[in-house]
Length: 116
Image 1: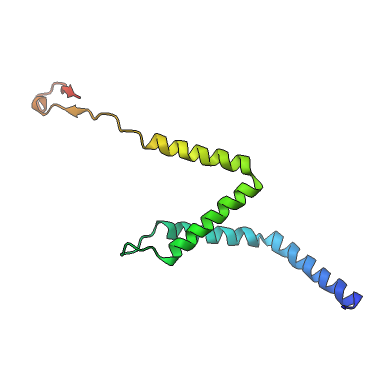
Image 2 (image 1 turned 90 degrees about the horizontal axis):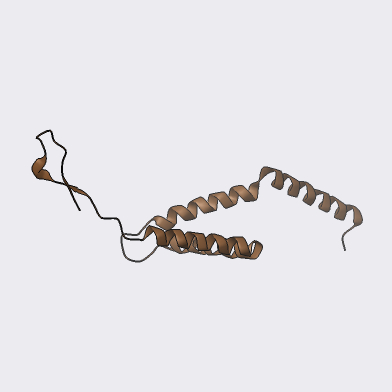
């Protein structure tokens, strides 16, 4: 059993260390650094078809972020996921037809004809 004065000193040190860590934003800085690292390695490709271990670790990080977001804000997270999926579907729609200038009328000072 710890002596009461040693216990109170340990608690005081823990409180001061926790306050310092919170004011220094150590967890936010660490999360930002890991997120930057994961994003960098998520887009890098190996020369072979196999993926690096770093890529898999980055995928684990992203999965952990999604799970954490689902636990702490499920409605907001589902809305965000649906919005991203909708934007991706809009992005994949076929491109509009290209307008090509008529090369026969170029160079004579007149307006060029347009074909579709």
